[in-house]
Amino acid sequence: MSAETLTSVVPDSDASSRIDKYISENFPDVTRSAAQKLIADGCVTVNGRTVSKNYRTAAGDEISVDMPEPQELSVEPENIPVDIVYEDDDLLVVNKPKGMVVHPAAGHCSGTLVNALMYHCRGRLSSINGVVRPGIVHRIDKNTSGLLIVAKTDRAHQGLAEQIKEHSFTREYEAVVCGRLKETEGTINAPIGRHSTDRKKMCVTQTGSKHAVTHYTVLEQYNRYAYVKLRLETGRTHQIRVHMKYIGHPVFGDDVYGTPQKGIEGQCLHARKIGFVHPCTGEYMEFESPLPEYFTEVLDKIKNI
Image (tube, rainbow, N blue to C red; front, top):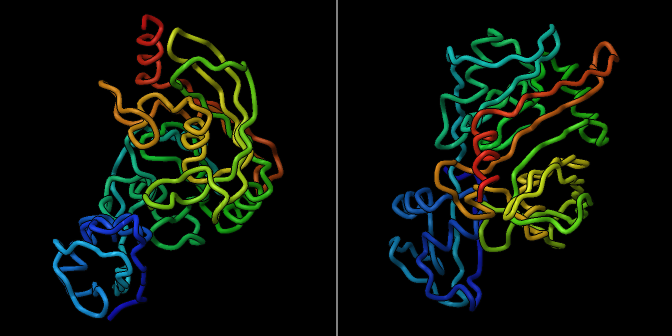
């Protein structure tokens, strides 16, 4: 039984593409391997007929994909160490290491921050985001390190979410970016939306996009790189990474929006500071995370390049 049927008409520019590649690039949240499974299961038709994964598209082909009912994930508590910066009865602030996924998703059903928090908090986390993302008010990417807030109660979650909506959160990041910036500080005001051909990426676009603003300050300039501080006014998916690529200075090591670097997996980006009004006490709270070892090693390396 399918949850919904998605359709797409192949444009001239995508003629002669493999069907699994076309689906992964044009249907939201469908990986190439998932597309191949859908094809093998007979969930994909072209002009009303099932095809093999080797089928090559033709301009004007009408492709239909019967998306299966999503399987409910069960999130199991796991005894994984968590760096707790602050904790009370309503919320906690954690320092997420680079390489850890925030919550379970396809391909990451265990070993996530949520699995660790389920164990640490004995399941006492807000329920607003359901069983897969309990307590998660905002996220940072797998290969971004640093601070994020987790809600234990629904009241705390609602109060924190409202502050994010009103852009009253303090969220400061530090990053190493490629190239020397002409201006020592500036603001990037450019809307971000889903990439038109690669659905796993975001980009600056006027189509289906959301308002996005990033403020930056150069902390140090090197021959080929810069060490910068960034303050988020909005919190769009991959915002800093997309905005820095947009102005020609992708984050060092970013293997999606920039160039992979030897010795570092993913981007050199750290959520350094976070500030907010406690949703239950009304007290303003601010926390700062020291630069992790991988980041300081990159700084030492680029000084001599």
